[in-house]
Length: 301
Image (cartoon, rainbow, N blue to C red; front, side, top):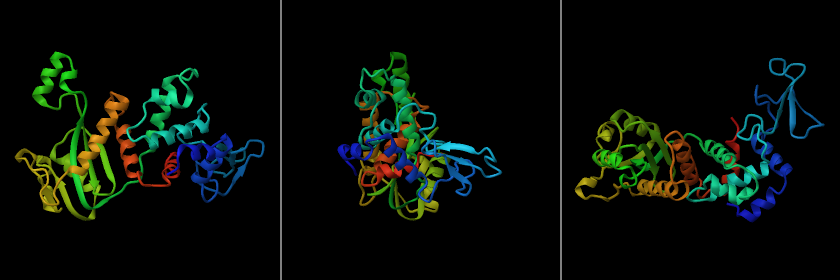
């Protein structure tokens, strides 16, 4: 993976950023983002990195005009791609994430006049791009659920009492599956009933899974019907039983929660899926030397 100095040299100008985006977006030649064809697409000489599609069923005689940022997370932006790329790179390499206020100080300058809401928007657009491809986990897989939200002693007295009774009051459930020394899949869920947990597990694992380790949550009780499921019983003081444990996924939850507490302090339920995207994507690309190039390819819609 690049360091910041080499990254700055590589993307020193706006033109370099646009050339890179075009090459990653259209490696086989420029395609119209509306009809997805190369034929009938012409470059506009007076406007670099702009094209017109003159296919009859798309732009017709006048042509459908588009640029290198059309139908991407950068569309209609007034911020330079050079700064967009810098924010994306810093988010990708920050193990515990970066808040919009940190981005404003590090990239734009605290007294630049750039509003923190602009930085917040840019960060969320990058998080939306960190969705990655659908994958199926194989080998030994750990499944676990966690809850993200405030602790009882930080709440108002009335809410704190309710939280103590339920344990999960005002918290959001997240479920995750992780292949040991491999990839992680995490998702925000509405509840932890059997149908939800069972459905997630079957969508996350592939046919070559050799072991599924979970805790004793009743929502996993049906997995043994068609999957190699083993349970570690935390309530009985068990944490590792041979190859059966959930330590790897619990380590990922620890990373997610430390990031939220340390960098963001508070995350709303509406935006939590984007933060889960970010931490999952960063974990999955921790050893990927082409991580930024792969991230750029996910920026178009």
